[in-house]
Structure formats: structure tokens, C-alpha cells
Length: 249
Image (tube, one colour):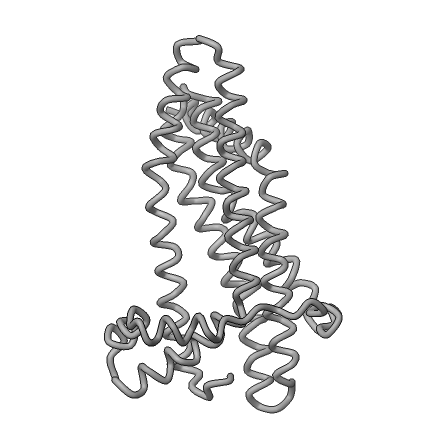
């Protein structure tokens, strides 16, 4: 909305989303290595309860890292907004997205970004009223973020607590993330886009959009915290579902 280039902004935003999801793939092999080590001990029945407990805490630490990342992202939202506006302007000048992205690594641009580093004001939520944002949007964002944060990790945990159906349990991670993606597409994305469109047409204000963004950042953090609560039940459910699937073959 600040750039006035809705189509270009959406395209650039989709690039960031794709890059963030691709980045999630890098920790999967490391997670798999930890799971293999725990699974071998469980199969050998040597200190299995202790190993499962230790492995569970490792999985919780991974989700905690997601909470820290979400919190850092929420705090840096003003800076990201500034960088995003500059990115759209760079793309318009150069007409090439790779060239515009390469500008981020220019020392002058890095210094400029560091000089303009911005943080949310202390009274942020005193300025933004919760009632200005649809409740279903915030609840949906908590649910979707929680599923994203716990889904893959719960599948790996299920593969350890149910080693007899480990491969079936691991294959469920894609399904869980797919469900979260569909939920995001049906609930979070359309509602947030509607608010932005209304602001562009003058039916809402820029303040309303900022309010929505602030609370989406907050609920993303809440969602990763909720993932801690659903991790073990989700792992048990995935393990049981994997066992039922295997009974049919």
C-alpha cells in the first residue's frame, strides 16, 4: 500500500515466502540425523524412555527457536517494511529482480539499512486497538502458525515413539504442512488481503493495515508457543494414524 504498486509488491512478497519455506528444508537433514540416532536406541530398547524424553526436549528446543525467530521478525517488522519499499523501488528502476536483490549485498545499502534500523515503539499495542482486526483472522493465524511450527517436528517425534511405522509417520509431515497451507489460503490470506484492498480504496486507513500487521506478528509468536502444547498430542496422533494405515496392508 505504501508503494502504490500492489502487483509488484505481491510478487516480491511471494518471493520472500518461497525463500523462507525453502530455508526450512535445510534443517530437515539435521533433524533426520537426530531422529535416526534416537530411533536406533529405542529399537535396541536401551534406555528408551530416557532417550525419548531427551529427544522430545530437543524437538521442543527447535520449536522454541521458531518462537525466537518469530519474535525477532515481529520486532524487525518496521525495518523489513522499509527494506521492502526500497526493494520495490529498486526493481522498478532496474527491471530485474535478481539485480534488485543483489543490491542488498551492496555495502552502502547495508550501511543505510543499519542506520535506519527501526523497532516498534514501546506503546505499540496502546496505539493499535485489537477490535480493529477481525478475530477470525488472528485466531486463524495462531492455528496455522502452530501447525506449521509443530507439524514436521511432530512427524519426526512420531517416527521415534513408533519406530515400527517410522516411514509412514515421516510421510505425514507433507500432509500436515499441506493442511496448514490450505488453512492459510482460506482464512488468513484472503482476510488480510481484503483489509489491504479496502485501505487502497479509501474504505479503511493505513493505520488499520498497520494494526493488522502488528497483531499478525504477535499471533505468529503466540502460534509457535501453542505448538509446544500440541507437539506431543500431535505426535501421538500421527503415530496412531500411521499404525492404522499399516494395518490395512
